[in-house]
Amino acid sequence: VQLQASGGGLVQAGGSLTLSCKTSGIILSVFTTSEMGWYRQTPGNRRELVASITGRNTNYIDSVKDRFVISKDNVKRTVYLQMNSLEPEDTAVYYCNVKYPNGGRDLWGQGTQVTVSS
Image: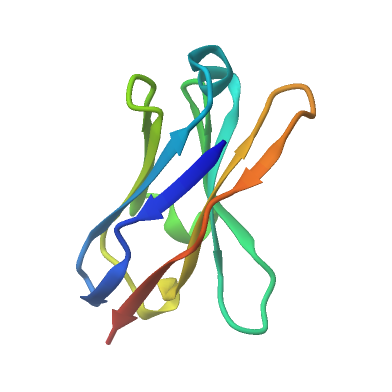
């Protein structure tokens, strides 16, 4: 199983980016029932959950509510994070994660850097 994150970059404050996390090696029934998440980490800090989606249920940290949208395409086995109205505080390395149901596997993709300039 592999998770390939992409879409990071440099953007000015107020701009938008869309991150993608393409998975491979996950069967459809597992993908649709797994918790898919986007986390971020800045130097010296712990990795924090930004948004997650399980089935049709989504969850966001307060600082990104109304600005970020997490979604997934089951056919493409891909998870997205649409980030709008970006702020310098959103600068971080973003990681995608999949947690299999019932305490199964917990997998990470490589990070993608998001830098928001003021």
